[in-house]
Image (tube, rainbow, N blue to C red; front, top):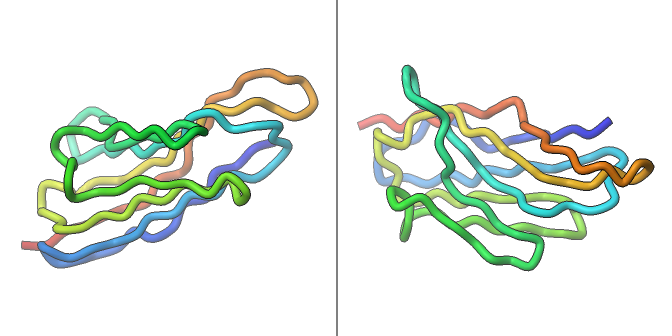
Length: 121
């Protein structure tokens, strides 16, 4: 069984910062991409940023220059540093990973439970 455990969400004023963390645990052989998605009320889930095992990153246009994604492969953990937050960034942020299971070698996509980020104006 594989789990993603997220932390770091909360309430922050506009212009503030938060650092989200997501740790993968379980019977994992290797992890390919790791990323963050978000879903605001009555909106579809959207990609915020993702990062490959080699460190290549990809960002949504709306967060470029404000958010930074990084990962620690030794800890199977991905981070999202969010700066200059805006009320429009308010959403539930979900961690996502694409990994290979240790025993079977099967590829699996896993989602975290989500962490709420609320930005007040």
